[in-house]
Image 1 (cartoon, rainbow, N blue to C red):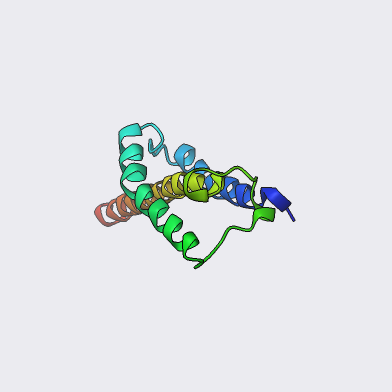
Image 2: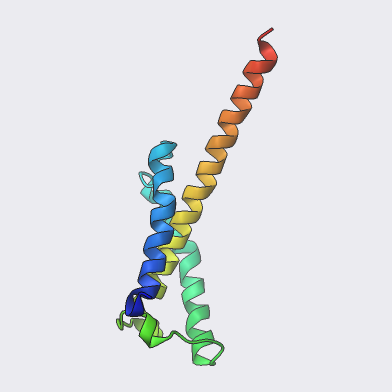
Amino acid sequence: MFGQWSYAAMLLFVIGASWWLELAFRLRVLRNPKRLFLTIGLVSPWFVIWDAYATAQGHWFFDRSLTLGIYGPFGLPLEEYLFFVFIPIAALLTLEGVESVMRTLKKLATRKKVTP
């Protein structure tokens, strides 16, 4: 459907589907670069190493017709490197969004118990 833009389109969908949480719940996840860099920096290198190993061993591959054709170190497509940036951001946004909703629900429940 999206041809060589398939992987990039999936990444844009993931980040777009979670981006609104930042605004809707005033999460400030994206305004905390230290937390973002720690999250991405501590996890992503290990996944890149694993991907490089797994693709070199033939455990899986990246369909060249579904990627943009830009390759980085270890022969991994650009989209794979972006995956290890966008997915942790989406996860943080989702986690913080759920926690924000839970805090709000607890406050509402507490108010109902206190009010006669």
